[in-house]
Image 1: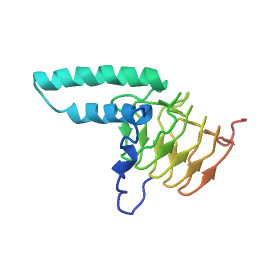
Image 2: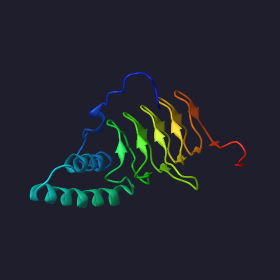
Image 3: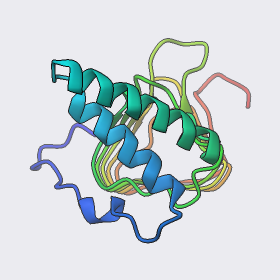
Image 4: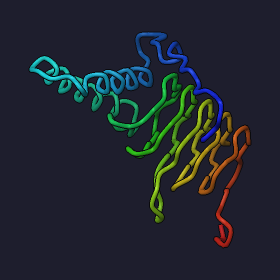
Length: 167
C-alpha cells in the first residue's frame, strides 16, 4: 500500500443512492455523516450525532453488518450485499474498494489490523486477519483466508498462511 505514486481519487458516485431501498449505501451514508459531524460543537451537532448513531444502529441491524462509525474507509466503497460484513474499528480501507457479503476484516492472536489498498475487490466470505497489507488493485477470492501480505495487482485464492504455520 505504500506506493510512490499520487494518491487515488475517490469516486464518490459509487456511494450515491440508486434506489429507495439501498441498505448498504444508507449504512455508508450514515457513517460518512457521523464522521463529518465529529469535529462540530454545539447542541445541534450533538443532536445530529445522536440521530446518526440511531440511524447507524438501525442500518447495522437491517444489513447485519458491523462497520464502526469511526472506521477508516476511503471514498467510493461498494458493499452491494452488506449482510455479515465485519470491519475492525482500526482497519484501514483504501478508495474505490468492493466488499461482498460475509467478509471479515479483523485481528487474530498477533497484534495489528489489516490495511487494504485502493481498488481492492474482496469476494464473499473472505477473511483478512491480522497485521497484513493488501496492495492496490489486488483481488481476494471468495472464502479466501488471508493472514499474510498480498502484493499489488495480485489475486489471492484459498488460504494464504505464514511460513512455519500449518494451515
